[in-house]
Length: 273
Image (cartoon, one colour):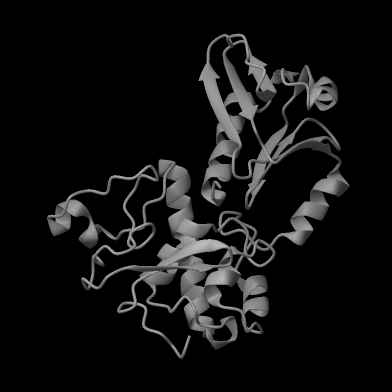
């Protein structure tokens, strides 16, 4: 599932192509035909993201809400749009650009109030300038749940996925099994600030890179990572490989319905597991 930086990048891409322009909207697949008809030939007034939710504004009280889920894809093209395939849920097009949405978990038309209800149930997003980590800390500091599970709870912090949770915990040497209430406020503030930085870099480069300059392949004389994920990481999907820092074997285990990755030496256990 795409992490929050991808959705913010998609919002940015929509703004650069369609904001302030009258957009043609169709649903070749037919599942969003009624919604597409209501926004067809309207001006896109806004494109924003909150966590893994994308919102495209078309005038007052009218928002297209998209959640890609596990299988959704959103691709862009330049020039005159070619004939769409019947898998396209929503096509947005102008004479010189188009966007095709396929296979999303959600694609619906919302009012302002319905959109606000989604914001209200989500936690703060490191990529939204108006958000900070205080509200998340209030919940984390009272929780017996592991910090690794809390980081994936979109009601606590929005946009963090499996890659960012593993990497940010490694970067700060925090045991992923540490209960939230055992985390210090200083540790949480450092995690939040690092997520703000890492995820903004993810938007800028359109991929996840979490390795500090001194640990990059060219600095360490090691081969670059080869993986569909792309980018350089410390522990994510590196189970049974040597840690870049200490050489210990990176471990993996299931936690919060996802595969967790960590280094037992760089992230020592805070207590019995």
